[in-house]
Amino acid sequence: MNRLFLVLLAVSCAATLAAGELKIVKATYGSGDKVNDVTEALQKHMGGLAGIFLTIRPSNKEFGPDPAPRQAKSLTIVYTDGGAEKEVVIPERQQGIVVANAEPAQEFKVLRAFFGNGKEWNEVTPQIMQALDNGTPLTVRVATLGPDPAPRKKKELWVIYTQDNKIHFIRIPEFGEFSVESFKQEHK
Image 1 (cartoon, one colour):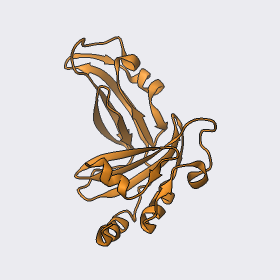
Image 2: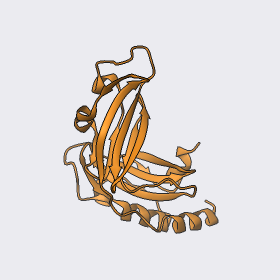
Image 3: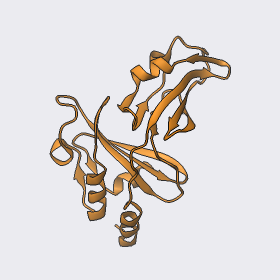
Image 4: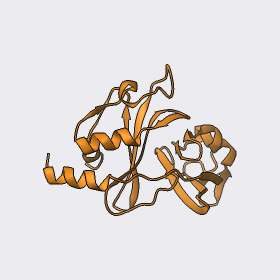
């Protein structure tokens, strides 16, 4: 591992974001002018922590009936983040994430990290930052990221970061390994 890269990574990861207030204003699903208002359905089908972050993989299953058969669709979410109105578009069948108080930046920076399942999560940013600062791999499990946010459910780690003026995320399943290499693998 390039020592300079590790030093730069540790320095750039030194600050994390404070929790913002994310509120859904409106959500539509479809293509062009053929869309359904799915604001209520989004509340039911999204994962994440209320007010902090949400995850969703839009499809006809969650947001049907199909408003635009045989056309590529997307989910458009209008939300407020700390009072400012923002919008994100997530293509059909692609995992998307919306994070409060997260602004894209050119340089690499870890924003937040969460461990859990569905709507049951713990923020684990300090543990992830420590693993990056130490340059040591971390096994994704309750013993290293506890307490258990979702007993008897399979969990995963989500690390949300910015790079190249975009918000990115990596997902690592429970018992997988997180390390600085996780970011490199994501950008291959």
